Image (cartoon, rainbow, N blue to C red; front, top):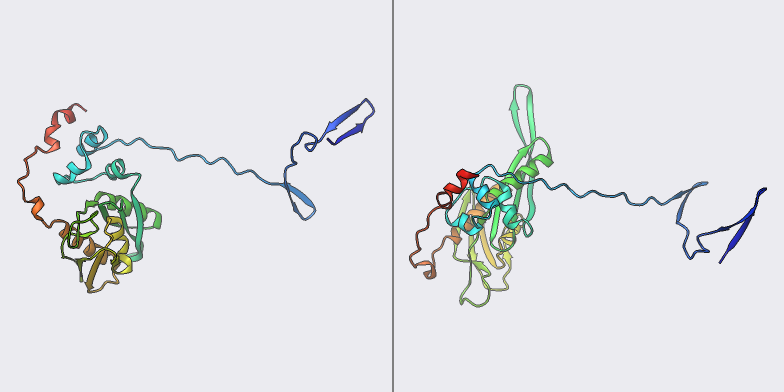
Length: 267
């Protein structure tokens, strides 16, 4: 141990250094003739969680766990709150920006320029949706596009190419979709084919959980928004193909909004 003494007019007291106590001295940075200690990272606060207060009947049923996501789509109930999707798929949901462009509008004061963002969301396991929003700045447009994409999310029914061996990996049947001048056709493919599609819409198939598919497109595919909408429509049309396993008579069920009407009146 290194011990040094300091002589003063009153008394001599030993002064212990950090090395004498087995500690290391704090590292210093030399800037010119002055020495500065390294600044410790500041404490980062966690984002405050805001309590969800639903304003629709469907949101109330979801918050009190009276309904499932499968029942929402089975009864074709409209989703007007993105928090409903966050409640069911919040941990597995992924987001991706498909395209960003500027749009202009001629007014009396001159040209009004805004930013338009197109976003796709999905859980890579059978749910996907797209949304677009225009705003004066990118951040506002991005938030609005994500909210719209969550509200427009829809289930995707996967199928097989050939024999039903293993997990579903492709679309059920050949189908087409159209938006503007863009036409897209999705074709089932064998295992190992991968996603044969344009770069802007590859993420849509990945987020939908489709592993093998072939596509054919025509029209002005450089318009990313129309290309994405046509792809979503083609996937939806393919999911609506009724195979023999779905031919059995379905039991009629009462709508959850009518089933829990008394509960909603008391909330």
